[in-house]
Image (tube, rainbow, N blue to C red; front, top):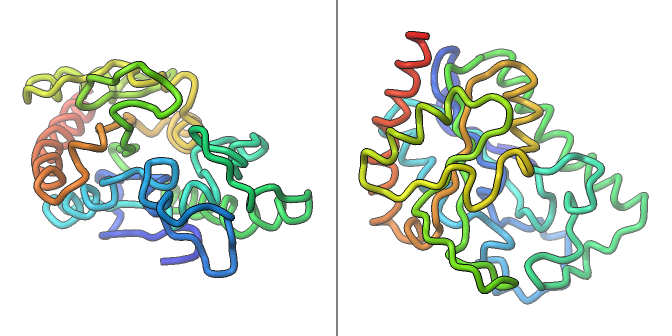
Length: 242
């Protein structure tokens, strides 16, 4: 465990590594975001349910997980470093006044969280190259800033490397869930962590967005962990078959 990330389980070459950039709503005591604390329980601060699903998968399957350890409002790891949204001044209609930083403070935030997170993930993947990376996120049934509903139970995201996604989509659909292909948004538009660490280095992966109301409680978290375990194993098996 560190300021930027924590690792669950034992990473191993040829295994499955779960990467979840937004797994925590933690705000260090010396950072004041200037927001209502109730917002830390909402999706703008954390991908609801993903840490618990990851923990269950690690416990039950022997995979490992690399989890972000601060709120995405402190530092959004799934962005390119020089994008303004790395340290957001607003999110889904909510101002984040404590993130109106000057250049020096912005650089200090990146040095403290963003760069150590990505350096640690890079080192882990070099030391223990996985057979598959699962990039795990959750999404809201509807954005506060939009009237458009999001009916999918989960969505599979990818950019140029479709190997894992093309295997995962039909396997997930066979379980009876409604699967979005590049929904609720496209991995070709927002895929920064996987672009940097998976696609750039040839590691097979797929991004999975689970609708947050389905994994907000322990029962749903257990159901999705049990659903995903055989899907991950089968994706790895088929990847290894070539």
